[in-house]
Image (tube, rainbow, N blue to C red; front, side):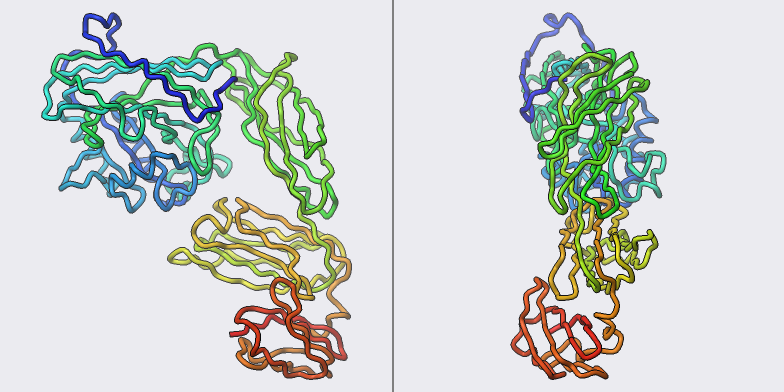
Length: 575
């Protein structure tokens, strides 16, 4: 489909009209009570938020046509799905704990509009449903699939006077069926979990009328007015991690406020989709699929759906480009409307430790050439060569109970593992250190996992991990922003053995050290070399077992001891 590259386009074809000028009246002219608007403040790292989602959904289902929900991702738990509007909404309501919410932005006690006790949302919603509204609202929308433009008509009828001189009309853009991470999902709302992903609903994406709505000044009793908005839905919406838009999942809510607060009434906007094709392929995601070996190749896959209205997809031709090399492929099958499938690529050549763009483009559907938007990601194959001993440093964030790792030998056996670790009470990091002593040559593989899916550096402590070789040089560092999993392979050319047999016979003390480090060994010490964690040689002493570290800066070092028996590596901390 063709979409505007602008973040948003709003054309206000807003016309005030007397009742005689509106020939198609969709709003009720009879006095009525208020409808409910639940603005739920949430975040993917909020473990109790799925319970809030469930409570709000149950309220909506209990009162068909009378309750609207807007899920606002804002605050410390919202590491993704944020918008340019969420922070100000969050601040106005004074939200500091999650899940939290407002019911029609109404102050039920004192001046605060937040209702932090989610178990009270139902009772307060019933209060709102019993309150008279000075204004009725109705709306409808037409969404053109080919242009991505939605035309929203809103009608207001004022059944009573007000003490204020103006209202604010708001149009919110929401998206349903956004699949992604969510803490606490399996415990509090398992019905919304599928294949480890959570189904987010009512997610705020945009406010067509701006942060606090459009001012309405003609609010006298008996006034009937109509306003029309046109908005072109872009390919993605949101800040931080923009969410690709799916036209069939876009929703709209219209509501009227007294100023920025006190929602008088609200309504979900029914949408009619026009010009939707019978069949249409849409790329949903492209993924880097690591080939878990030490060879210079990798793979990938992409998932696409049939977003058409009535006919099945039976064939799709596509290209995928890695760096400057283009490959082609074809899928055949029988994909019904709204269904999706995943296609895997054969392996393609890469260079070790280099990042390449991987781009997928659809060229033909059901035998008809087409020009669809392409989608790109980055692909990388992490492989390092080393001989013998390695030192693995893992720094976890506050949610260390989500972090684990495994080291596999060339036969696929797990030879070292760790985690889950202890969770911290606040944002911070914890250091974990391991010696890696390969017992054979071949391809070893280190896999670091985050059960939640946001890595170990997502705002709750700057976690990372790195691996050093026996000479103290750093093989690599991962910044911790790896999603669910990071994988590194090691081509071991020489096992940990004769050259390093002294490891079990040599120790160093004191550790940490302030002035001197003594090497305790049953063999004559020939050479002591100290490396910093950047692999730089910072100290050398020969034929002595006492080494001064006074002049070294505080921190961690690698000490390499060469004796008559062999070589050993030791981690030394200078304080």
